[in-house]
Length: 254
Length: 299
Image (cartoon, each protein chain N blue to C red):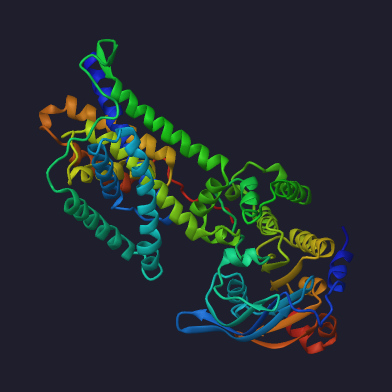
């Protein structure tokens, strides 16, 4: 695998006029009295790779948790142009949207294999599920070696691989990734990004990434949202963003 | 030796019953992290139904079928319509709902069937010579039946947990509710089924224990002691472990039988005191019990 796969992913954007797979209109969310997200509008098309950049506390995780049905919010959430009523995690999975939460979110007492099987409970095709288990074991050989080990005994990088594979087991059309680089060695981060980029290219799975590692995320993404104190302050084509000096300095640091 | 064996058998019989009650508590605790104090009263209610049907000429074994179904439906409905709406607002209030169910169900049983004790038929008829002679000690068939019932229940549960999709979902919810939801598991439905399952097992356990534990009759206060012993067994075992409930129940039963047998100088019935001392000791020395999960995490 080379770094090329990263830019291949960003090239496979959907036609702009297609109905977005996921769209928010005036989405606001928070905890108790304090509002963390204000009037966020964003859209991810089928097969598109978008990234949300922002500093700590900008509301990135709140955004992802709202989209996955873990947090209540106000405003509209649309999937395939249809407004989503009661937003619950299992229903979002049913609609083809799957989250890799921050802090891994594996089920520590369950074996690696059971974690993957649990990721596929929404599916009815038993044979296909086992095929996918094999597929991700091939993609992540280190997980295959630890197949019957409790997930809680894995290293941080292995748990992140498991969390990604688990989220993919439902065959999502859109994978939400909340800081998959957090706390991992650069080499493993590079590997993980190459893997999800390849998944995007091969399977057409759309990606919405939330990242602090902006440089790497920008290589994969074709569209960028900048989030500042809970609001989208700018958004646009990733290649154009890379041309802008001020944005490069502030967000990309090079 | 024969006295020791007699006490061991008695202890294992009682212990099997404690283990069954503990199992119902553990199944609920694993999913929703609450102790259902009304678990015994649900079982009391279904046993009254079973008794009432047997009075109408039903075979006592056949009455278990409606008892188990009603136990499942009642507990599942209690979770869905009473516990869940309250939980959303306040976790602690769930305990209050449990206490309300406890008194409510007991009162309901009393209103429908009266407060006088009922003779509940034995599932396994006994006569004076229905026992095995083991080194001079008598192992009665109904004791064997109780232990056998525990083996069947635990075996069935283990298969459910390890071999079925529902079991996988129950284990996933027990480990991490949020991650289970992100897998697409309907967490609320797993809660409801877990409560129902506990209600169904409770119905069987009560039908077995009522005729063989003193006073041997079906009465309104009958389940309260059982719930305490079952809770102690569950805590001893770690509250979220099926294996723990079994080991906890059996060791509590055997331990109490030995203490009551050999420690008669301490006075007639000190079981309850001993049981409560065990709870306090376990909570102090080893809060996660014998087999409770200690939340192994690597970061």
